Length: 278
Image (tube, rainbow, N blue to C red; front, top):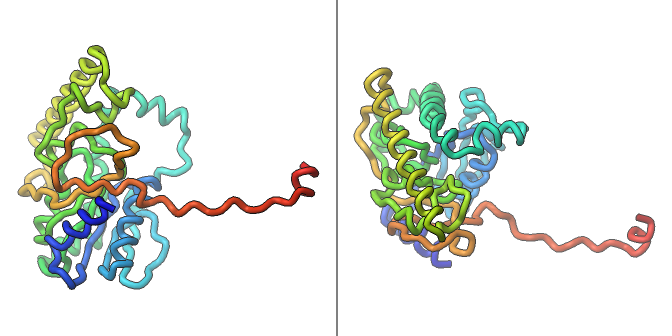
């Protein structure tokens, strides 16, 4: 309930009370778990009367106040992946950090290559939408779109806070002695060894991602690398106080964990005859 109140109050700071917003939403990653969270946030907004236009790789049809733009041809769909191969490639934190910048750059390029999005940015229309909702990637390529459209930004993060991007998103950096890294194997750094490895992981991730950004900026710059920064007004994060250890958060971070979960159904009745026959 507290998260819902904060959510509504935050929306009122962007859109005047009693008015509905014209929202542009973009899901930049073609992963179902990412889309489940984003689509649930958007469904709540459309049910509240806001008008949403969303670029998504998982279209399921337009409805009242809701329009989809199919991006499935622009993004690689991450479905039916081999679990063991995925764990081998992405399960080791340092290996994941090493390829993160390339992955982020690939998704940024893929999304901006969409013709309808490119036409929207080239149109120069700055009053077509009231705000932008988008899932942020490892580094900022969102500001380019937000600055072109002249709209405030809301981040939709389908996981707990991305540790090495926390300062970029909020201006705050959690203390590694008390807050575990998103990629750490422990929930609480309760020992000296855990605090030390947590600090090493944070330091390496910050230095490595920043180094990769500088290299690409000087060797192969993109227009979004040079755009002025547009900081998020609100961050909707898939976290909840009962599932995540206590940690300091900035006022614009709103926990909405579980918003994508459907109400539990009753257990169907099973006849005695069916149980005996089994």
